[in-house]
Each structure stands twice: as structure tokens, then as C-alpha cells.
Length: 519
Ligand code: KIV
Ligand code: ZN
Image 1 (cartoon, helix red, strand yellow):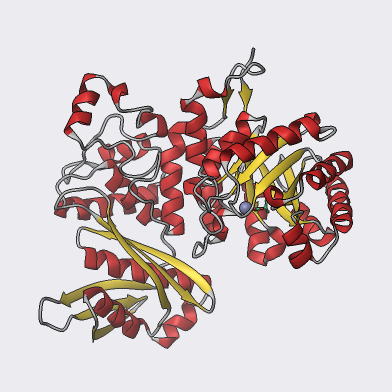
Image 2 (tube, rainbow, N blue to C red; image 1 turned 45 degrees about the vertical axis):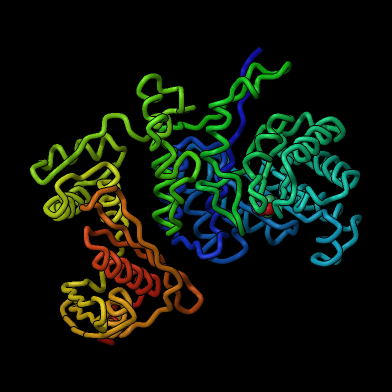
């Protein structure tokens, strides 16, 4: 009996980007898509092209530049949406249109205000129209898990007739439990005429924390595609986490080997999981909780004496997978201020960063600054330094000087000197705390006051010299911008993150000239 493949359909750039507060620029989406291709996903859902010009452009750019995976564009079941999706994915070598319409009574009655007959007709017409553009068409009955089973069977049979090649069964509101989801997939597999010609796909949301369990229950019952997102990003509580479903299948081949298959596997290069997770976290500003399965900082850390003792005697006593299998650990090299450019470049390569000459120069300079303050620079620090240096936008504003005074019983005050091209501006302010004071001073110096939506700080590595990473989310005119800063001093990291976000906002507005004039 041969092993079967489970296709990984990544929707980080579409459903994932629908996470409240997540916002990616077109360049960032392309960077993530390129990494998803390195990771080995089979399908990238690059966006919902009709929903905005940016979504259209991002999907098109991914279709033009990312080789390997099939590129999918999402469309509601109407010709306008499908045409836009078709246009956006045209440049891709392998392309798919993913069209959907809701099939549950509550959605049909209240949202669509349509009868089930009308919905069925729209679904069939949409799939037929999509097939005039591409050969690979996926259909999703939205809110499938709260739909009538008889209607689900009817509509799926009809869209198969119309030419659908993948049938996706979304648990749109994260309502279903694993046993039930498995039963739904099994029933559809046995009762929908023609379904054996199609791939059955899972798309599970995590409102009850069941997204991964439901997806795997679906696979166990015959689904051969999982829709998922890196770090479990997505609407509300998110989608099934890519890293969890992939490692679930890899770690438990015994569970998935049935009478009809010799086992299941995916095409994912699991050694790229950690890097992909970090990249998505960095670019979206969504910090990963330490106890997050697979990619959390504690996922491979052992604290209890009994556990450490067991691990030292035999690793498998307390570890079901290795850190190396997701691209972590291995030889843990520590760099320091005596590390030369050559050693630094080598380590960057070993960690999988492909940097050009200029990026190496910038990253090395920053590395030396940090190594001067922090004797030991670990791989995680290096990754943060590189990410900070290569994700720069044009620096309209630069923080030249920051002084903060705070303490018990004193009013926190900050003074800053900001450089904007050839001019400098100074400002001083007080605030509720040192970060608040620094941010107020930055606002005065730049003359810009975006809304601060979110601020987080984390230590990249442990110890008293740990590098701190601040992430801020600001918004202006309904648009969101993420900024990051790293430093051994958390106030400095916070100020840098704020300035980084402001620079991104200015770059997005294309307003460098006017910003300069305003100073
Ligand atoms: O959750 C959902 O139903 C979706 C569909 C568009 C597939 O995201
Ligand atoms: Zn969804």
C-alpha cells in the first residue's frame, strides 16, 4: 500500500490577513509567499482580489513572482469576483479560482436573503464560469458545518457536475467538534455522487480551539487537503495552524495508516517551519505565545528536574519530536564582538538567510553595535537583527538621540533628537511612563500623531543582557502599520519600534517630500 499526500493549502495571506489588526504591505505579502514556497506548501491563497486594489495587486505580484505552489484567488459566486480573481492569478504557472457561497439556513436567510434553489444556481454558474478561466476550481459551501446535510450533498454534486475539482468544507464559525467533523467528511465522501474525482478539503476555524483537531479528523475520514495558516492566524480565533497539522501528520503516521492507505505525508519541508513562523510573526506584529504548540519559545524547553533527567537519559521520554525537525537548535553557535564579517556571513547562511552584500553590511554593523553591549549573540538574536535590517523602509525619520528620566515619585520625561533627511528637530515631553513620554516627544518632533493601537515587548533570549524586541501597531486614516525595534534597552527598543511604524506610515503615503516640508 502506498503512502498518500495531504495537500497543504496555505491561507495566511487571505484568511490569515483577516485577523483583526493584521495588516501586510504588498512587499511583505510577497516575502511571506516566497517563504511559503520554500516551506513547500502546495497552494497559496494569495488574496481576495476583488475586495480592494491592494488585494488585487498583491495576488498578482505573488502570481508573477512565486514559483512552485499553485496560486489561488478567492471569489464570491458572481462573475465580477471570479473575473477579478482570474485576472490576478493569470501570471501564475499553476492557478486556481476558489469560489464560495453560504449554504447554512442562517446565512441564506439573513445574509444572502436567497432561497436554497437560488444559492444552488449561483454556485453552479460560478463554478461553470470559473472553469472557462482555469481548469482548477475549488468550491466552498460557506458555513458548511451548520448546513443541512441533504442540501450540502445536493449542492456539492451539482458543482462537481459543473466542473469543481476541489470541494472545501468550511467550519466557518468554529462550531463543530472533531468527531462530528470527521462524520461529515465521511458522509460526504460516501454519498456525494462524483466526489471520488475531487479532492475533499478541510477549512476549520478555531473558535472552540478545535481547528487542528477537526482538520485532522477530516483527514482521517478522507480529506486530502487542509486549509491552514501559519501560527494559526485568521478571522477571530484563527484558522488551523499550519505547523500543528503538518507535525501532527508527521508525528503520528500510525494513526493515519488505514486499511486503504499505507500512511499519509505532506510535501512540507518541516525544517522551514520555525523560520516561516518567525517571519509571519515579525511582519504581522502578532507575537507568538510562549506555550504555543510547535513554534512557541517553550515548545522544546524542559524545566522540571524529573523531565530534564529523563531527557538526558533518553530523549524520547519527554519529547515526541525534535527541535531540529522544525528548523530549530542543532549546533547552537554563539557569536560575539570578535566575530568577523566572514564568520557572521557564514552563520547567516547556515540559518538560511539569503542576504545581498548591502544587507550583510547593514546587518553586520548592527550586529557589532549589539555585540558590544551583549557579550553573547544567539541565533534568535541574529534572526531579529537581520529581520530588523532587511525589513527597513526608507528612513524618513531617524532617532538620533533619546534621553529618558523616570523613577518612583518623579514625572517620567523624555527628550529626543530626530533626523529627517538633512534636518534635525528636538522635542521634550512628559508622560504616564518612560515609553509614553518618549512617544509623546517623538510625536512632537515628527509633527505626526498616529493612534497607538497596540504595544508589546518581549525578550528574544533569556538572561540579564537579553535583547528586547518591541512591536507597535499604529493606525492613521483607517490604515494600520506595524513597527519593530530591538535593543538591549527596552525603552530604546520601544522608541525605535514607534519610529519604524511612523516611517512605514510615511512611506505608504508616498509622502516623503511633503513630510520633509512639514518639518
Ligand atoms: O471560513 C470560511 O468559510 C472561509 C471561506 C471563504 C472558505 O474562509
Ligand atoms: Zn475561513
